[in-house]
Image 1 (cartoon, rainbow, N blue to C red):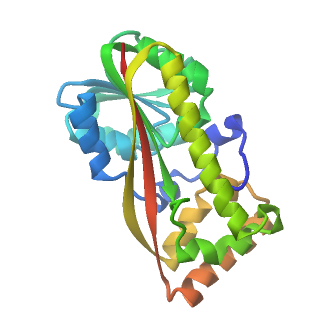
Image 2 (image 1 turned 60 degrees about the horizontal axis):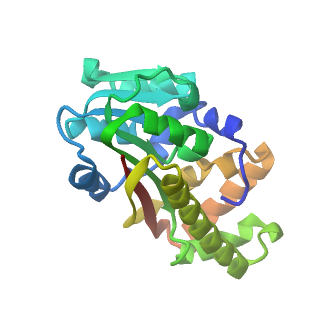
Length: 271
């Protein structure tokens, strides 16, 4: 992101049009859920809680792989209503709790697995991690992950082409790359440090998955429109940004845009 969005604002940002958000965002890679099965004990009958479930992209895959007694926590009531509809086929196997995670009333020490899919940055991470530890049974697992739509270490032609849209404040493409790399490394270091310093977790680990993506001009424009730093721009500025992004995708890339999605996942076991 080129701009920082306040936590309170971000928690209620995507509920205005959850259908558009659901359609714009690509799914999480299957290899990530394979890792949850191998390392974190995701299996039929496991009790799971999810932080910031959103439209349910991760929730549905957890349920498909047999998770039971899933508690999906979502702070935005509008998003929670959409989530409830998408999870209706699983009936009593899932429950939606409408509250910020830090305030959600959840039973302590009973969950086998807790997850956060591209959502944990909307919490007070230190406070939320302490709650995660309380909710997990001894030996339970925690996993949090993020998608980056573009790899800061391997910038695509499309990302180079749209860099001027971010304006002079970005300091030029080279600086944007450098800052993106520095930010990714800093976030990784800080999140690993918090997990280790809390004293409640062991077997802390980090993995990355790269997934090739392909979009039409309309699809990549819808994706960018779903990003918090773009969706919170003033209306006219946002419209200009997205119109120019669509023009670049259609005219300079023939209406087909390709780049890699980098998914970073942190896992840890409750002592």
